[in-house]
Length: 427
Image 1 (cartoon, one colour):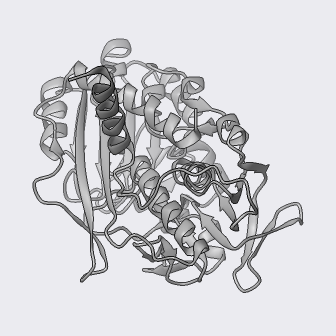
Image 2 (cartoon, helix red, strand yellow):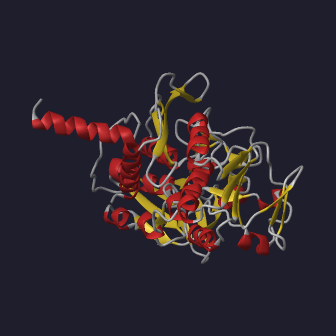
Image 3 (cartoon, rainbow, N blue to C red):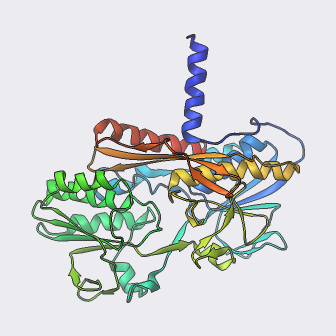
């Protein structure tokens, strides 16, 4: 095999690992008049990727990205901050790569969508016109579903840290301040929620820290679900073999109410007191999606046409990532939001040109989970669009899970993070 062939195969392999999408064309660098204006709302894994690939594949698409924060902070890998294995700055990246590609960046917050007029309104009163709109609003939290949790005092004390950033740092401080012999309790909502293996990874990483620094302490996992929701056998093994005596897992333990004064989580049949209560509320599509009338499935999620990611509620609006009602077995993950974005970007370019969209898209997902500071497990899947059922279906025999936790996968996990950040943000 010559060097050129080897390099090309490596490049194509890397593209498949991050893209997983059958493309209809190549990147263009057209300098003529823009074929259309696309506004992208939300600069996370979905929105940032959409903005990048609209420019890279469309060439002369006018792309504006609106993001409330000055920098991207990754939720994947953020559990390592809670264990003291990473700092939040190591998960933070800027948007300069997108800017260098010609994406117009607006730091602000979209407060309303006028689909009929094809305009979005920002908090400062300004508006942006579009031909196609991409919305990647993530999730927001149904604190009203848990008695007492909607109160500001409860939310200030019982952190979820399910959006990486200030709460991640604050929860780490709570864990560090906990006495040796204290209890860290994590409450997991019923599915669907963002990142199915995330809470179990968090329990392991915190247990790993406590095992070394506060060995008399305990991690209590209160799961509203009847069993572990992802990588079940591997997490069960980690709980039993690595953290016996430190970590206790309780299924069917749905959080009903909280009491701020006593620091108590009230379940159906018992009350649980803990030194640190990490309460992850039930979730729904982000507030922007709800307020704009995009939410049309179970009063929580956004239905989409999977060939283009276009909303089934508002024409011309494409919705990505965690806010969508998932296809069968499709996880709410950062990697999948990246994939949604590529489906949408390719489709939008075709639609702006008046051409047919790709009828056979394929997407894939990989989720890595740390069970200690270095040992990792993963799950991977491939999803093919099914024209008869009009949704993505898992490809039988593709993907799979780790045989066992190991440090080699730990290195893969960190490389995956670097690569997907670079892919999404044009780093």
